[in-house]
Amino acid sequence: MKLLEASGRLLKDAHREVNSKETRLDLAYQSILAAALAALRASGFRINGHQDEHKRILDTLAFTLEIDGTTIKYYHQLRQKRHRDLYSGMLKVSETELIEALAQATTLLNDVRLVV
Image (spheres, rainbow, N blue to C red):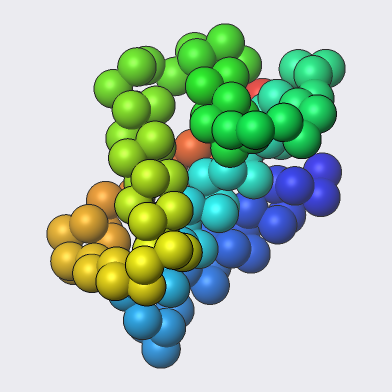
């Protein structure tokens, strides 16, 4: 599935230390989003480009993969952090935040690969 391939490429790029921490966090988020969308489509559903599309895609993980609310809340925090950076350009990412984002993206991608 092309979305899973894209998620894997994004995650691979997120691990490249030549990129800034901010870029790597953004890539990890994009990997999470692509994996979530792959799970949604594999379940036979689509999101029709409405407002809050990313939010809705992440929310569906509760149903497509039975992801717990705490993890989905983390994905939303990551989404909001990334969104703020797009408009302010003032994102600061700690090493701890980056490591957590990479771990979360890796876990989700692996989980989606098991069911798709």
